Amino acid sequence: MSAEQGITRAWLQTVLDAYLRRERGAGADADGKPPTIDDYDISALDAHDSMLSDLLAIRVRFSGGGGGASREARLVAKLLPQDPVSRLTVQESGFDRREIGVYRRLLPDARAFQRRCLGAPLPPAAPLCYHAEHKPDCESILVLEDLRAAGFRVADFSECLTEERARAALTQAARLHATTFAMRVRDGVDLLAKYEFLLRPQQAAALYDHFLGRGLPHLVDFLKGLQRPELAGLVARLKTYVTDNTALFHGLVTAKSHLSAVTHSDFWCNNLLFAEPAGSAAAADEDAGARCRLIDWQLAQVSTPTNDVALLLLSSLSAEVRRARTAALLRHYWAELTATAGRFGVSLETEYEYSLERLEQDFRRSRKLAVLLCAGSVDVTQGCRRREERLIALLTDMHAEGVF
Ligand SMILES: Nc1ncnc2c1ncn2[C@@H]1O[C@H](COP(=O)(O)OP(=O)(O)O)[C@@H](O)[C@H]1O
Ligand SMILES: [Mg+2]
Image 1 (spheres, protein in one colour):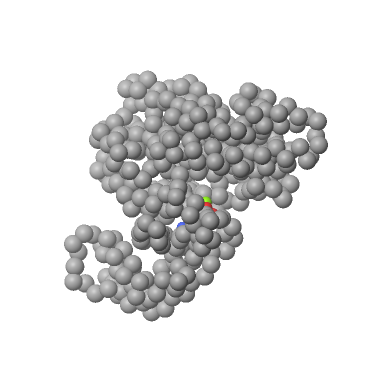
Image 2: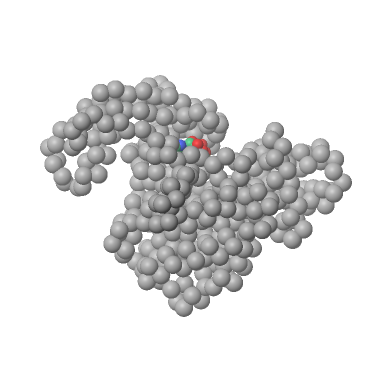
């Protein structure tokens, strides 16, 4: 049975009913009537080329369920891929289980913590979740709000992020990091123990090793094929990474920082959606973070927050913006991180002796992992001249700076 066939009128009714009841608050009219599904249609999500999931767009028109007139919900269902090899990869690595755990438990807990400490939650980091169900060895399904219906669009990898968008993304990252750090130090939450679905450092190291074991030889061949003498040193260096590197990655993912917190860990522009800023009158008091949403939480883990910052800046900025604006973007991240932590009563500087200088040190170390992840993802650049040149500029800069 294809996943699509599993999405029936009755199933949609159950999912919407449970969602609407949760929205109205626990215990509210337990005997209230479920919504009536007037009409629905399902289509493949356009422009989706990932091997690691099947995505469907669902439009459903319904009435009742606590509201009167007919309304429309636009949803995205993320399912296991149909291809058996990709499917096994996702299941064996626990990608589906992890992302579902994030939507079901981690993000709601983080919002509840914000609500308790700040009086109201911060603007959401992720789309609304209608339904998340993990079933070992068979269908897993995640049903999210279709962010396109709220005016969000995924950033185009060829275009790179503008500095303004990078700031909005870093605002969201800083809030995720500061909130989960505060949950740890204020409420004593052991993040890895409580959220057992998060990627363990050992698993992350093995996964990166496996990923780069395939990606790097591909990159080396590609660079050699260009026959550019100036790239010879770079190629020689990359070749030394093409062996079993689990120990190296283990060192990078467990690198000690004062500040471990939940990191998204796949923080690049294809996993970010942005809304256009409101008109100039409204723009002044609009929250910058609210214009960005994070999706694809399959690699969420507890690590050094600068891992997210480094991956974003290395993967998703043009060489010009990266060279000219990295320092300013780090300062922006730092300001948002300390301000958010401060709102939870956590002073990173006095209580944890963290400073912008230490953040910059962590960032420099995080670049070692980020540059390898960018190098291993050469397949996402190939065939597009601008993307290829951007990757070459990144590798050349990082090699010249001794990052790898
Ligand atoms: N909630 C959503 N709203 C709108 N588009 C989405 C949503 N979730 C995913 N997408 C689109 O689908 C693409 C792939 O989704 P993602 O969760 O990143 O899957 P994968 O794990 O296969 O990369 C995204 O880049 C985005 O274009
Ligand atoms: Mg993705």
